[in-house]
Each structure stands twice: as C-alpha cells, then as structure tokens.
Length: 195
Image 1 (tube, rainbow, N blue to C red):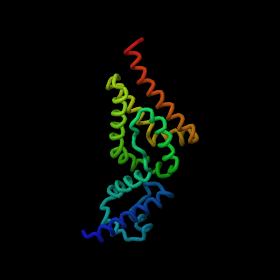
Image 2 (cartoon, rainbow, N blue to C red):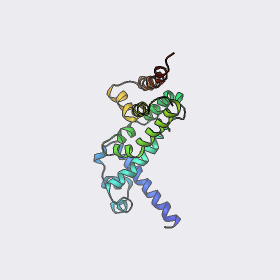
Image 3 (cartoon, rainbow, N blue to C red):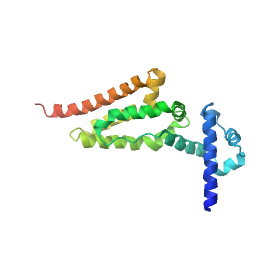
Image 4 (tube, helix red, strand yellow):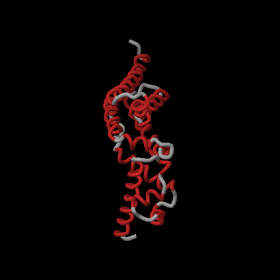
C-alpha cells in the first residue's frame, strides 16, 4: 500500500470512528449500526465494510479509540502518590462522563477489561511488593485487586451515578479507601515485628 493509500485509509477509519462517537452522544451502543455510521460519515456502507468486515472489529477499534481519548494516567511509581492518583483519575472521568458510560456498556466493557485490567493490576502488585516487601504475596494480591477496583471507571460510576456523590465526595471516598488499604499493609509490619 502506498503512503497516499495508507493516509486515505487512516482518514477514512478516523472519519468512521468520529461518526460513531457523534451518534453515541445521542444514542446507545446497541443502536449503533453500520448503516447509521456510514450515513453519519457520509460514505457508503460498502466503503465501511472495506475497513471493518464485522461489527465486532468495528467495536474493537472504537473501544481502543475512546479509551485512548480518556487519557487515563498510568499507575504511579510511588505508593505515596496513590491517593492523588485517585483525584487525577476521577477528574479525567468527570471530564468525559458520556464517553465513560459508553465504555462501561455491555458491548465495550469486556474489550476494555481484556486490554487494560491485568496490566494495571500487575503494576499495582509490583508497586506494593516493592514498598511492602515484608507483606505476604496473598495480602499484596488482595490489596492490589481492591485498589485496582477503586481505581476504575466502575467505582467512579458507583460514587457519581448510583450514590449521587459530587466530584469531591467521590474523590475523597476513593482516597480514603486507598489510604485505609495502605495502612492495612503497613500494619502487617507492626504485627510481624511487635515492639
């Protein structure tokens, strides 16, 4: 494929993904069809099928695009930075609530989880192991899993949508959970080395 063809293909794919997002601002993911996306992009369905042979392939690409646009920060390298990470993460999610809700839909959430969950969990486990070297692997794993959950859009959604907390309260809840989890791991040193 020539450079010009590659640029045209990239332009068309971006046009289709942009069109899908415009539609998703006012409809649910299960209402999204090739026909609607092609009409929104002002191209033929046949052209769309050249780039995405199945709805699944299209949803894969859409998930990657929407998740990247959230610009979720990486897990910090220092344990002390975890509470402020919650504030940064939740602010990113608060800035794009519709995009978050679309990514949490039944059609897209499994794709997000497959692409990101295990890596972020491993990053948390590694961080905790390095800082709390005296804690058992099981306690590190359990704590990392709990921290990973509070550092997710699902937890943010519960705080913001289901509990109807404002942004500050949601952030403070997440930060409290992180602080309590870190204190738990810190207490393991005291219980193993009583004064």
